[in-house]
Each structure stands twice: as structure tokens, then as C-alpha cells.
Length: 325
Length: 304
Image (tube, rainbow over all chains, first blue to last red; front, side, top):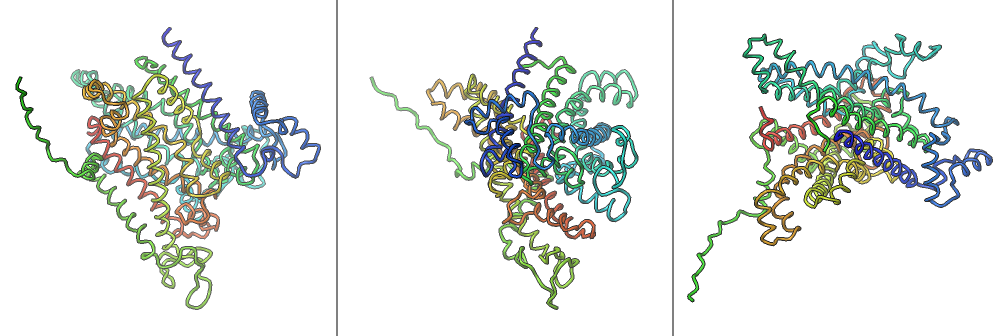
């Protein structure tokens, strides 16, 4: 019962945050220079198109009325017409989203597998020179601008050594019949390698440091001492008893990391010309394609908000000792 | 009835206000990493202050070789340009030196604003509780729902591209972390005996916050401020790299954007795009090292 109420209030909070972010987005895109119609109408549209969009978004109405129409349109998934692509924004976003998600998840999974193993190892070898050297090194990877790391990787592996392609998702001229056909091709994976590695190097620090400090906490607990007293081997104690329990908060941090990663994607996608949401957002803002920019921003915000929710719920679910307060 | 003379209260001599503030910050001087971080900061501050004396050229000036050719794409050491030149004939070393100015300016102003806004909101929410707390913490929830970098990009692009708009956009979002932590700290502080005593003695809320609670959270504000310095510098670099930065200021992010757009990667011009990245890493990790030293002092349980 108590948990039920807690989840209910968390969902209420979700609704509030969604409404607020959508409202901020509405206001933000009316801050921009020029008249408010520029948010939806490109001067090169035909008069007929212009009038249709005027009616659809109520651009001749007062601001509060526009706001209500905007909310209504959003609820129906209507995001307007992209200026540059001359197609609905929603459609454009559905094309880009898989690219962004593949990049995000492939890099994060690599980062988490490495981070968890290395973090557990460093906790086990606490005080050794390996640990002394590794921790500042890990902090340094967190201090790197992601796009700069991407540039260095590009210069080395693509331009100097010529091992991997420099950008995009496929070699020019290559056509693929379907979704799966493209995403499983060698060509695509070669293009994925550099941006994914860049993001993975940047992201591994979080799971690594978290895993290490959790391990150090858990190793002090009674049940670990007990396992040692029972005479279990070092390996069994570290892996079977300590690591399993230390893993929990690291797994919940994965959801938060997805949200952060999506924001970092904005720059890395731009460096590698990776056709994803982040790069499109940057291009749309630079080209004053406001409907598309608004749509891409909203999509990124939605993922961030729902990942925050997932992290909260997962945490409570995996560790029943946590009560929602 | 003869009055009994109250014994004279001997007031201990209080150290100077500046000395007390400095001590209140509890700078982590005996942690080697933190000391290294402070040293890195110091070096960059000196470079930023004396940029005019250290730089050999105007960072935006188009330069020529002694043979009157455009000094474009020179390697380090060629014709006396110690770190080489850009494709447009500008001196990379001078740009790097001036870049430290905008980095520190942005880092410190953004960190100051983040720490100030976050601390004030955290203090007010934690101290007054009830509906004030509820409203402010829902605001923090909303700030956590805003994708940080896209938000800064859109604001920087729509408002006039300038350093200050980037700083304001960052402050509008990043106060959330500081506010949450300070609030929870204040929640425990306000139940302490000396706060109760002050309240019973009739101190006003304002005085209690200022005299009894704020000094205790100052190190925490400083900790979050030093984290924000790194964030701000990284964010400014990203914004400049994407082309939404202040066109009138030379920053490390601007240098990287210039190099990227001028095909420096294909030209193997490592001397052009590696140094700005190293500078960013140095300044940002200096902040991390100081932070770590701080955590060891503030949360001794964590240090092992």
C-alpha cells in the first residue's frame, strides 16, 4: 500500500515535469528573433501552405490560445513540418532515433561491462600501484571534452592509419534493402566503431568509480567478514559475495547514464557526421529549422525524463530497503 | 538589594574576517592531488592575467612570414611560431594563451552563479520546509528533466551568441544538484541544539540562516562550485565547437572548431588540435582533484 502510494506520487511528479518541460519549450521557441510565425512557417512555403499551417497551429490567435493548440497538437504527436526536409517532423525523428539509440546503447554497454569489471578489480587491489595510477587516469577521461576525444580518434584511426571510415553510417554508394540488413552489415559496424569507442571511453568512468566505491563499502560488511571466516577463497568472497551486492546501484545508474549520454551525443554525432537526433538538433538550430529543432529537443527531453523515472523505480524495486519518502 | 556585578566576559580575540572566511572554506592543502589541482589553477590564472605579456601576437591577427608569404599551416618552430599557425595564418600559441582567459572567466562566473543560486535555494527550501520546500524541490525536478546541452545550445543560438548567455543558460539548469545537496544538509543542521537555542533566544529566521546555518554549508557550496567550473568549461567548449559560441572571444572550444572546420584532422595537424584539448583536460581535472580532496575532508568516511 505504501509503495503503491509512492509510485503514484512519483507518476504525478512525472506529469508535472513533462508539462513544465513542454511549456518551457513552447516559450523558448517564441524567444527567438523575428516574428512568432517563423516558428512554423518558412518564407518559401506557398501561400496555401502558409495558410494551412496558420490554421493548424493557430498562429493568428493570441499566445494563450496558441499554447492550448500546441498542447493539443503534441498530444496527437503533431510536431509540424520541417523547413528543410519538407516532411513531417515526426517522420524525420523516427528515421533518426534508431541511429542515436544504437550508438548510445552499444557504447554504454561496452562502458558498463568494462567499468564494472575494472571497478571491482581496483577495489580488490586497493592500495596497489595499479589503483594509485588508475584513479587519476579515470578522472582524466572524465575531464576530456567528448568531441575532442572524437577528433583525436578520427585523426589517428581514420586519417593517419586509415583503418576506419571517417563519418556517416555507410560507405557512399552502398544501399541496403532493410533495417536489419543495414544495421548488421560490416560497413555499418565499421562506421559505428569510432563514435561508439569515443563515447565508451568517456562513459566508463562513472560505472568504474561507482563500482569501486560500492565494493569498498560492501567489503566492510559483516556478511563478507563472515564469508572470510568460513574460509571461502578470496575469489568466492570478492565475486560471489561482494561484487553481486555492489552491482545494484551501478545497474540503476545505467538508466541515468542513458539520459546523460543522449546529451553528449549532440557533439559526438556532429564530429562523426552520425545521422542521429543530436546532430539533427544542431543542424536544425543552425539552419533555423525551428519545427525540427523543437521536435528533436522534445524527443531528447522525453528520453531523459523517462530514464530518470526508470532509475528511481528500478532502485526501489531492486533494493526493497529503499522506501520512497 | 546590592546588585552583583556580572563577571566581565573575556572575549577571545577574533581573527580578521578574511582569515576566517579563508579558514571556513577549508581548502584541502595537505592532499597531494588537491594541492596539484590548486597549483594548476594558479598557473592558468597567472597565464590568463598576464596574457598580453605572454602571447607573442594578437590571437586574431593574420600573420606573414619574413618572406612576406601568408603564415598559413606552419609547423611548430617554423619561422619562429613556437606552436605553429592556423590555416588562416594565426598564431596557435597566442590563441592558446588567450583561451585561458575565456575559460577561466566562464568557469568561475558560471561556478559562482551555480553555487550561489543552488545554495540560496537549498538553504531556503531546507530551512522553511513545508510548501516552500515543496515548490522549490519540484522546480529542481523540472530542472533535472531538461536536457542540459540541448537547452544551452538553443538558448545560446536564439539569444545573442555571447559568453554571458552561455553562462546564464548553464546557471538556469545546473543549480539543481547543489540545491538538493545543500537542502538535505540544512535539514539536519536545523535540528541541531545551537540552532534551537538561537531560535529560543529570539533570533530572526534571517539571522539564524546567515549566522548559524550558512557558515556550515559554505564548504559544500564551494565543493559544488568547483565541480561546476569543470562543467562550465566543458560546456562552453562544446557550444563553441558546434558554432554557437561568442564570435568575439578566442576560446579553446573555438580553436577546436576552427581546426575541425579547416580540415586539420586530414592534414595531420596534431599541433593544432591537441594542445587546446590538453588545456581543457588540465583545468577540468584540476577541479576534480580539488573536489576529491574536499570530499576527503567533508566526508571522512569515504576516504580510504
